[in-house]
Amino acid sequence: MRDPIEIIVGLAGRRSLVLRPADSLNIRLFGFPSGFVASLVGFAVAILAGLAILRETRPITRLAAAVERFGQGMQAEALPETGSPETRSLVRAFNAMQSRIAGLVQGRTFVVAAIAHDLRTHLTRLRLRVAMLPDDAMRDRAERDVEDMQALVEEALAYAKSTRSAAARAPVDLVALVDDIARSRIEAGAPVVFTPPAEPIQVLASRLALGRALGNLIDNAVAYGGSAELSIEAGRDEIGIFVEDRGPGIPEADRERILEPFERLEASRGRDTGGAGLGLAIVREIVDAHGGRLAITARPGGGSRFGIVLPA
Image (cartoon, rainbow, N blue to C red; front, side, top):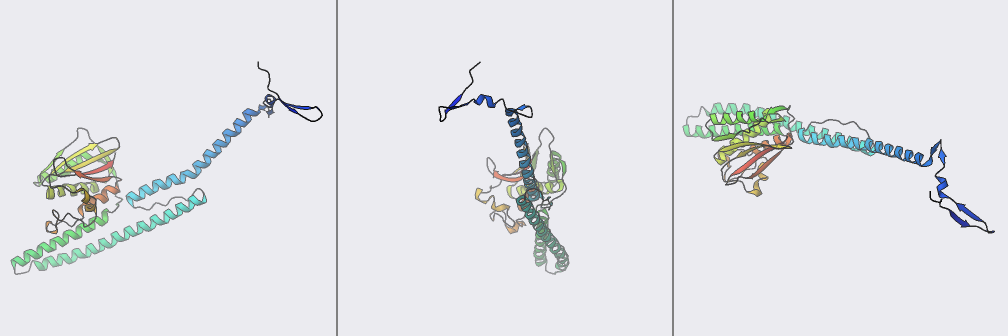
């Protein structure tokens, strides 16, 4: 056994102070060594600090999840105001903000729906009056104008309803959905090809909304690219539904612009084709509402490749 360490300090009168640090380890509190008590106190302090951090970060975690949900569905969901005064103030401001935004979106949808309803009535009357025109050529031109206005009204209404729509979602057999949509186009004579994967794939989605988005992409591919080739690719984190055409393609600089409402590539999507420039905007709104993304790339060998990429 080693000799104990001593610290000797000289004092006046030839006296000295002898310190033995090792002896301090023998101090006991409540019957326990001081080292054990110090460790126990440190452990307790660490637990209390962890609980305090958890108490303050939990409201922030809930807030982050609520922001994500609100961004997808535009449905206001009031959060409980808990945590520190600063955190409660932040949650209170978020609750007020999402309530105002949801009210604005709902108000806009209501106004557009009301206008579309009234326009439908007037267009029906106008169509009846046009049918009574004696001049065949003038009547044909007027009927085409009325049909174009009707299509514009319907697309505008569909876009307003699709904006961050919070439609009910349920497990959807994606392969069956794509196959149904492809078959309906094929039966109508459209050059559509679907290569289904070997295994069934399910996603959590609104079947009606997702079907509308996919239908818009297929119809665009047929109208402006001559054909539509469909495929599904499933990964661990994402599932992609791809629509390829063999058209002139879309310049990279225009791929983001054409997703905006009423934007078209004039060379291939003029007003004389009947397009209102809302089809892709509707697709993006539906995909965003499902927490996914719309990807536009060039098809190898020419043409475009549109992909609806959803969380797995």
